[in-house]
Length: 156
Image 1 (cartoon, rainbow, N blue to C red):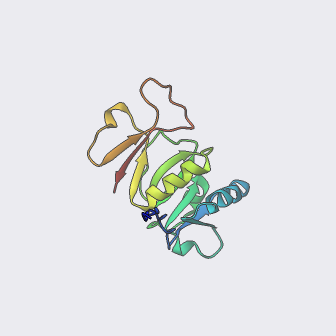
Image 2 (cartoon, rainbow, N blue to C red):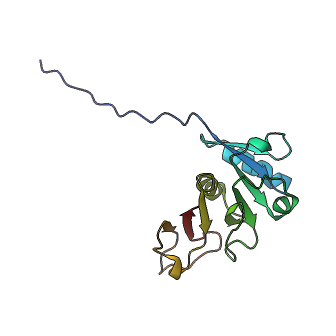
């Protein structure tokens, strides 16, 4: 009898550490909704502002009200939910600006990139191909949608 070798592909172990995400939004219902959506991810640990754990956050999700109130440490990278998303480049500790209506998957991706030190902004045709940047989003023959921003990320 011939013996047969069985190959198995091991799944990578889940990350032993999760990114702590501070959620500081003026809209409490939206904040709770995003806590639930982000908690479903194995690598994100969302906490609400005011819970006392904000000082240890790896990254924060804020809106204009929270960013003006200084609810987040200036050293913490932030993703800003804004009505002005895409109309200006993020600055300071804001590493990404997304529309307030962005879905949980887009927000989670932006949080991961911001926590890794990438700044994210809308791409224009002149921004493509710059050193240290990548582009993802709609192709040239598609019409851009405000809820699906083109993204250029550059590591800070």
